[in-house]
Length: 396
Image (cartoon, rainbow, N blue to C red; front, side):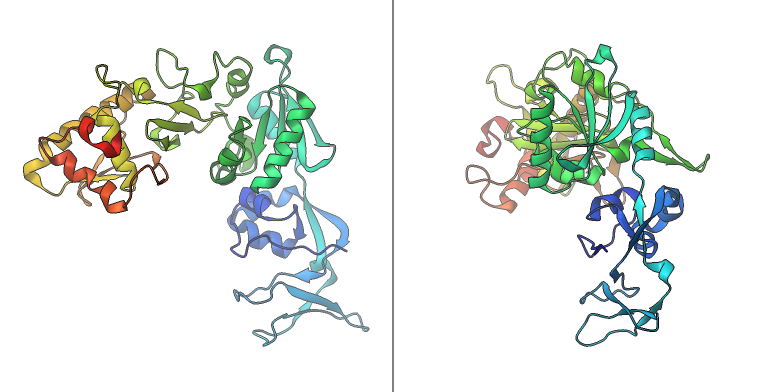
C-alpha cells in the first residue's frame, strides 16, 4: 500500500499544477478531482487504475487540521475514513472499496504531444537513476540529435541534481521540460541559471482545444531546438541580431518577462524561447554615447519596475517632460522587441500608465537603494525639468 500526500495544502486547479504539486502522479479519483478541478473532466482519460489501495483519504471539508483522513477497515468489511484531528471537526465517512483504488497519471500521451510540438522523434522512457525524469525524444540529425527531457522535479535542490546528472550523461546541449510555467519562472530559471540549461514548460507545448474537445500539441515551438543547436552566439551573453530581440513569431507583450538583474543588465524571457536573454542599455538604444552611461529612458524603466509596473501622473505642471520620456521609452521598446502594440498603455480609470509585460525590479542590495520611498521618488525627479538621469547617482 502507498500513502499519498499533497505537498501543499492549497490545492492546484489544473492538470499541470496537479502534476506539479503531487509527490508523484498517483492518487484516488477523489483526490484527482480535487487537485485538477475544472481540468478533471478533460484529463480523466489519462488516469488508469492500479492494483494498489490508498491508506489515507482526502478530507471533503476545508479544515486545515490533520488531514487527510486515515482509512480504517473493520472486521465486517466496513471501510471508514476517520478525521485525524484531536477534536473531531466532521463525521466519519463511509467508503466503498472502489473509492480507495489508486489511479496513475499516464504521462506518455502528454510526452507524445510535447514531442509533436517540438518536432522530435518520440521515445518516452524513464531516465536511469532519475525516477522522476523522462527522455521525451531526440531531435533529427540536422539538429545534432539534441535530447529533450521532462522532469517532474519542482524544488531547487532536486532540479539542480537532475540537470547536473543529465549534463554528465549527454556531454552536450539538451532541452529540459518542466511541468508548469510557474515552476519555470519561479524555480527553474533561478536554480539552473548557473548551468545554463534551456527550459520550457510542458504547459506551453500541450494545451486543450475547446473546439475539438481534446488535448493538442500547440504551435510555434519548432524553432526552440534550432536556437539550441545553432544559437549564432550564446544568447545569454549579450549577442543580438541587427533586427533586435528574437521573439518567436506572433509574440505579444504579455509573453515577456523583463527582470533587472543588475543596475545596467536585464534578463528577458519570452514564451516559446528556451533561455532568457541578457539585455543591456546599448541593445535598446538607451546608452549615452558620450558618457557610456544609461540614458533617461533606461532610468525611467527601472523606476517603473520599482513602482510595481505603473507610471502615475500627479502634478500637471511638471508632467510634460515625463510624458515625453515615456513616449521615447515606448518607441525604443517597440523597436527592439519588434512589436507594434503600445507596451505601456494609458489607463484613464486609474490615471496611470501600466506595462503590458511582467516587469521585475532589481533586488535591493547594500550598494543600491537604502529605502523604498527613495526609489519611488525617481518619479518626482523625472517630472522636474532640470532632472537628468546622468546626475542621479541612484541610477548609475
